[in-house]
Image (cartoon, rainbow, N blue to C red; front, side, top):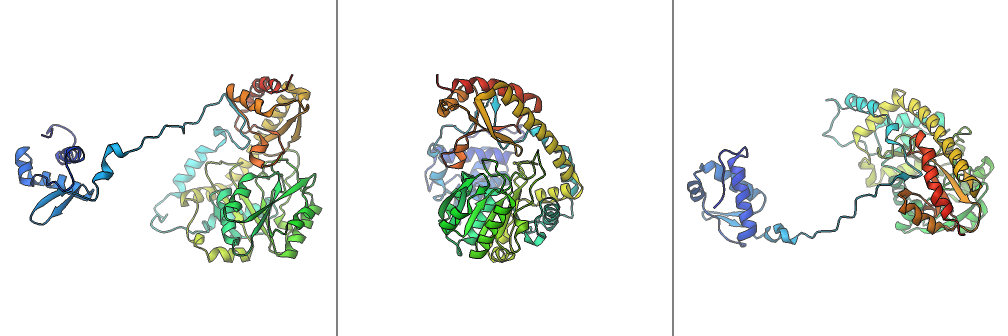
Amino acid sequence: MYIIDAKSKTPLHIQLYKAIKEDIIVNYNVGDKLPSIRKVATLYNLSKNTVESAYAQLYAEGYVESRAKSGYYVSELFFDNFRNESVVEYAENTVPKTYRYDFFPAQLHKEDFPLKTWKRLYNKVVTEELDFGAYPDGQGELVLREEIASYLRSSRGVACSAGHIIITNGFIGAMELIAKLLKGRYSDFAQEMPGYHIARKIFDAYGYTIHPVDVDAQGLKIETLKKTGAHIVYITPSHQYPTGIAMPIARRQQLIAHMQRIGGVIIEDDYDSELAYYTRPIPSLQGLDDGECVVYLGTFAKSLSPAVRVGYMVVPEWIHMLYKESYDSHFAGVSITTQLILAAFMREGHWERHLRRMRTLNKKKHNAMKEALCTHLGDSCKIIAEGGGLSLLIVPTKEAFDWQKLQTLAEQEGIAIYLAKERSGTVFEALRMGFGGFRLEEIDEAVRVFAKVWFMAYSV
């Protein structure tokens, strides 16, 4: 017997539907016939329409099937799939650990995001005129591409128009797209080492032969690159990852000349260019290219928000033609609302004001981190990269230092640290002291607490 409560706020047909569904799962076998609609209606003092509605829902969900002039039967199509005991339980291991201090080198504090402005712009752009019934432009909304092109021309010296720009959902989306588009033409991929491990992994996943190329005090070694025979090279020329080296103009021209000569492609990742604290940002390498060999990558992750997931790539015309011929050109990687909000954010001048504020704030955090390291670590460490981005790079000044012990002790004390070797893939080791995720006033205390495990990592 089913319990049907006429006083319940739940409609009668829903109560009956749920009761019969549970009965089917627990007690019925495949092919068993359900009681007739008339019989159920009489037994529970319900209207025929109520019972018909319950049976119709069971039929729609595949629990039962209807046989002409015979009635409803438990369906053979669904039964085993709905048994609760078939559900495999997995141990929950996705809850992130909470740290007292997190020195993540590519993080912004949540208070730094212009939330009020963003919410106001959302209400402004989401109107009845916005067509949610149509597919958006796969290359990215024109208004956003125009704003980005204008910004890049004036601030980074990038030679581009809106037509050269493809909007992506971040760095990985851009690199995967390049790897797919160039796969039919090239097979060898070179990367500065140490360098960002994700770039290497993406091209490796697409079947390219990977060639690591050493860096020196001026960045990527051009002569070593030539020996690899690679026609694609990935570099971070304005703020080399992770060493912080800036490639000088002469080395940039040598690189461009070589890649133009062999008909290759340079992937220029300008990820930290907007956060330079001591000097003006170095103009882009792409702006020096009078041919068509540079693909320029950028994102809004370091200056606006990594959560917004908006990146862009500036491509030569011949790569743009490959893109238009691919299936990727039909589907936008970023939601239309996010694109339109960002376009309005830039068009109304909020982006430039926000960028100035972030440069000022993060310069203060950068200097506070440097001062705290000098105060609490003293001559036990050496700063080997500073002046840009959201972190400083330090190394111990004595050989008797145990990196593994440092990691273990930091974890025990609830301190999240990040070693360069983990993401650069070479023997090069250093500690990346991120400051972007802290409030300005928190930095000194965080470094003071960290200093205790730093000194313990020195062997006695």
